[in-house]
Length: 112
Image (cartoon, rainbow, N blue to C red):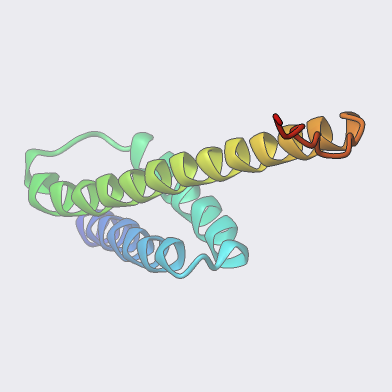
């Protein structure tokens, strides 16, 4: 009985990781929060159990899915930071041009 519970938890962690991966790719942030909370609960439960080498295949599968999630999160984080930096640069440029007084163009005098 305990063995099937552990296998169920490992399968749940894997399925939650797959769902999280999809939600991250689709930018479904409402779903991401709930999935992260549920995964955390499953992980806490697994951490309380005595490890068993028989878990390794299912654990490896779940951790592979988790690694992909982490990679997506890192890519999205970098993209958001880059976007934020570009917005800040545009804002600074805009503020600079607004604070610089306008001067009419200078006309060149013709030599003659």
